[in-house]
Amino acid sequence: MDLFSLSGKVAIVTGGAGDLGLAIAKAYLAAGASVVLVGRSAAHLDAAQAALGRPQQLTSIAADVSDDAQIDAMVAAVIKQFGRIDILVTAAGIQHRSPALDFNHDRWNEVIKVNLTGAFYCAQAVARHMVGSQTGRIIMITSLTSEIGIPNIAAYAASRGGVQQLSKTLAVELAPHGVTVNCIGPGRFHTAMTADVFKDEAKAKRMLEVIPMRRAGQPEDLAGISVFLASDSSSYITGQSFYVDGGWLAGGGNILG
Image (cartoon, one colour):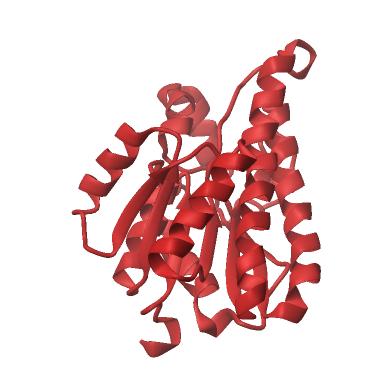
């Protein structure tokens, strides 16, 4: 459908070698966009490209989102190759689990720098070009932890809540330039980052009991909303957060079962 076509668009997906980033990139390719995967590991990016079949409109750039110089260089490289950037998805993220009272300060700083500061660096660098074009779509991956408290992930929750507020500020500042900024918040998803949680059968059972759909999300569940928010059909939507959670938040976000 032309309403959701991304033909001729250029999209950057950070965390592109991760499960969620990979699923979003796949959806963008299917919708006709050229996609640039960004991640810290060149080897992981190469594997991601192979998993997507190495189509002609797919490329990758190794860069650490927490390093502003690397992000500036990455954006410059995309502009040099494609001449434009239409879509940015900030899907890069890391996790560390520990009770708040015992949370290691170095781990705290690392999570915040990648998840929150990295999202800002990428959005800032890309938005400068979008403002010049008077159009653009920035989509930030957040989490249900932007809305509810979940134990033992203080840094992750703080970073995702910060990204949600950052997106609102950027949405207001960039709206006069035709650039929209929205968030997608996945619920409980099967990814490499959550594999340790799902290995505990009793814990996994309790988690699924509070999800009305009674299943965890799959990365492909983000495809539709990601394409919609990147397309021209969402041009009057900005500053919003969309939760893809099987109804968990609607049910009160109960984590006790």
